[in-house]
Length: 230
Image (cartoon, rainbow, N blue to C red; front, side):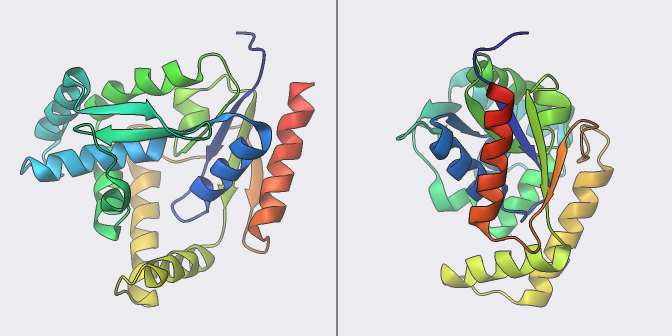
């Protein structure tokens, strides 16, 4: 498929800074940002609100299919070339950014019915290119034909420290040790799940941000995109 502008797929483990980097890269290029991870967080939130346990695969899949079909869960256009996830017509914002919902997203994203329910929405937003998508399987499953695939990572200790600092800045009670345990648990879940496990695509560019500041990471990825857009 030939697109006038590239699809930029940014994958990597939790806490690697994908959301921040993807947002800045999209802004720098004038591309649309599609926050795919928020879709899975939103499914976990809808299931929680409906009293469905995240471990109940069939029930969670029904929730996802119903929420998408009814419009209770959908992607909408945000400001400045972004997309946002809407739950019952509202942006859940920080409600889907808690450690609990992070674990819930990891759990529900392993279910094939959930992934199938959300796949078309992700592809529709990126069909014409000039988009940046971040998640766990963008380059391997959602857009295996993306013009640029980036695997953004950092050591588990660095990722835990970033997440801990973020939570503390929001006034959330947390400990570094517990945050590190959460990061490692999620890594294990994401890498070993049967459906679309987290892995680096064979043709993805590896970017390790452990010793890089965000501006350096963003500039590097922007340069990669521009090289492929020529």
